[in-house]
Each structure stands twice: as C-alpha cells, then as structure tokens.
Length: 416
Length: 115
Image 1: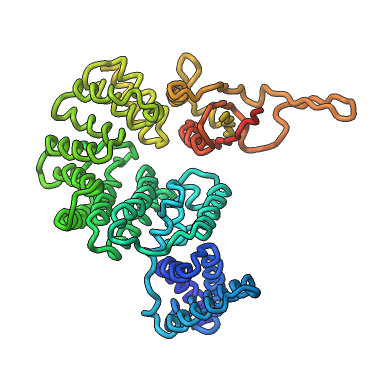
Image 2: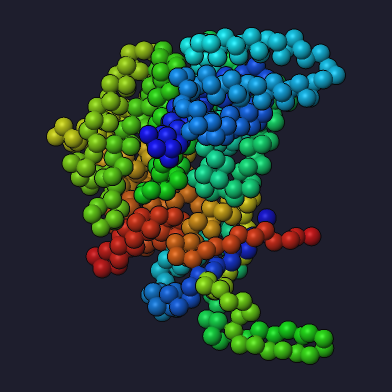
C-alpha cells in the first residue's frame, strides 16, 4: 500500500473509533477522577498521537486499548504534576492498575457512559446545559456545533460547558447510576436532555447542524435503551423520536412547502421506522407504568394509524392528551389537546380551551400557540381573529417554509 | 435587558426582492413587527434608505471631510435596526432568528449599555 493510502486508512480508523468509542473512553477516563475536562484533554491528545503514529506503525489490533493507554498516561502525568506534594500516590496506583487491566484486555474497558450521562443530567447541573454536556461528552461534538443548534454564540457555549464540567468536579457530582429509589426521577432528567437535543433537531429541515442533531439524539436514545433495557420510559422516548422522525421528509412537498400532519403523503413516511417505534412502544407498555414519553408515543402511534387505512381515532387521541395534561400540567400539552379537541368537539370548543391559556405570558411569543389559534379561528369563521393570530404566527416563525404556508393561509382568509 | 438587532445585508438584492405593501413593508416584516409588539418586546425599529443616499462625515486635525456613502467597503450594508426588550441574550437571539432578514442577511445582536 502506498504511504498515503496507509495514512488515509489510519485516519479513517481514527475517525471510526472516535465516533463509536469516544463516549466510552471519556466515561472510563473521567469516572474515577470526575475531571471531565481533564479527561477530554487527555483523550484529545491520544487521538492526536494516533493520527501521527498509526499511519507510520499501522493501526493497532485494539485501537480502543491503545488510545486508552496513551490517554491514561497523559492523565496520570497531569495528576502527578498537580499532586506532587499531596498524598495522591495511592490514587494514581489504583488508576494505573485499572489502566493496565484495560489495556491488556479491551473487554475490561467498562462501559460507564450511563454513569457519565447521569452525572451530566445531575440536579447540580443547570437544566439548560444538560443536553449540551451530554452531546459533548458522549458524542464528542464540538462546542461550536452545539452552539449553532442551541442558538448561542460559540464562545458563550464554550464557557458554559467549561463551567458545567467544573461544577461536576467541584460539587462532587457522582459518576454512578442512581439507586433504584431515585432512578425514575433521575432518569427523567437524562431523557429530558436527550429529547431536548432531538427537539432542537426536529424544527430544522435540511443538512443543518440542528438537523443532524436529531440523528445524534436518536443514537443516544438507543444507547440508553440498550444500557437500561428494563426502563419503559427510555423505550417510550425512543419510540416517540422514531415516530416523529419517520415523518420528517413528509413535512415538505416537492416544492419545499410546509405540509401539515393531516395532509402528509403517507408514501413519504418511513414505515420501517414506524414499525420499530411500534415494537418499542408495545414493549414499554408491557414493562411498567405509563409515563409521559409512553403517552406521547401512543399519541404519535394514533396519528400514524392513517398508514393502515384507518382514520385518526380522535376520541382516543383526546383521551391520551387528557392523561398527559393530568401528568404534566404543561401549557404546551394543553395547547395540543385543544387543537385535537377541534376534531371531536368543534373549533369553538377548542378556542374556548385556548382562552384558558391566553393569560399565560409564555404564550405571547410561542409560535405554535398563535398558529393553532389562527387555524381554529379560521375554521370557526372568525376571520378577524384568525387574521391577527396567523399574522403573529408568521412573525414568530423561523422556518421559511412555515412562513410561506402561513402567508398563504392569510391570503386565503382574505380571498375566501 | 435592552438589545439592538443590527440588520446587515446586500441592499441591492434586498431592494430588488422586497415586495412591499402600502406602508412600504413586506408582509414578513409586518408580521415580525406585530409579533414583537404583542410580546411587549418592541422598543424601536427603523429601515434605512440605501447607502447611495448616505454621506459620512469626520473631522481630522480640525478639517472636516465629507464622503459619499458609508465609510467601509463591504458586501453587506447596514440597512436597519430594532431595539428590543428581552429577558436575556438567549431570548434576544431567538428574536434575531425570527427576523426576516436572518434568511438572506446577517443580524448582529448587541446588548445596549444601561446605567
């Protein structure tokens, strides 16, 4: 093989290892020290030396163990430098033992990603930073990629990530899967963070950072399900993501215009993804209590019933929203419930439900609220209300396709 | 907190592309303005005439110089602004993303110094 071919093969291997093992190696390195930033530095140096030496010496039989050995050496050097005058030797010895074991046998590299995720979603970490932290530590995404998806300047996102990692270390956040009694609550925070990442990716269409984020969130969802196979809510959340992901392409027509759910072309739904979601949802419902994600997934399942030639079962969707509203008390759920209620009780009844939300300050600049209000008012024949609400919805939209769709709805209102 | 959204864009393309209503505003901008007002975020906002109508003035060593147009040679021109009230920088960034010009120009988000 020519040198350049070897080099590029080594480069490819390094990238492949980075994708599949980054989180595993980082979790392993950070677990004992709780120093995430230090572990990241060590791992980055290990990847850098891999890119230097693999093209020359060939790719090692066990790239994970190789990277871990190098990273661990850097890490222990760094700790030694800091702890020369303190009693750190016992600690270093313990780490070296573990390192030697892991380097000798790749199977000894325990998978501590779940513990790392629980640390990232710990109550001591600011809720808004939990998803970015998981994306960086488990997937190795850069601060600037995460910043773009979360609409935060890259330097600010970088600072916030640094602060969050310092907090893990200083506040003594444990690297452990919580005890059974706390597991449900704490798992909620992990799932919420992953779902927040997915939701960031859902609104975007096209090859943007946020769009790719949806794939990463689904990957994380699968990881949690595989590491916690007994947890029904983890399956429920993965099912929910797959149901919505299955309809991603159908949200735009050939001209790139927005298509609402009820008008989507079923042929453009990804039926394989829907089937996977159904299997997961059934497994989740068998396995235990019904939580937020299972109910939301069940709602999506009902919406997808159209692919089997059935019409959407609106009364049962309303009933599911009732259960969800009872569970979450969320104004967003109340909004979605009202939109669905229009199908069973009529647009006026649905609008009456929305009036209950009108006083909520969070609704003032919440685009879906004004879009729903506008559509319902149009159906109820209240043209002036519909015009005002659709105009606000258009002003709050960030997506050009949605904006064009709303502009067209407003024109129809004026013509019709 | 007060923020200024500075709208930069290619004014030639903007003038050619903008469909305007009677008030000289595209429906997208009218909707964005309504949304800002409804949310209580709108403090001020103006669209500027193109740089061909502008002049730049400076006094150096006691001598006054007047130049045509804007000072800098750039592909994007400063074309308008909003001053908005937002809870924090993140909220101001959300508004910037909703500004119609974000799709073809650049919105600079700057916190306003307040005493």
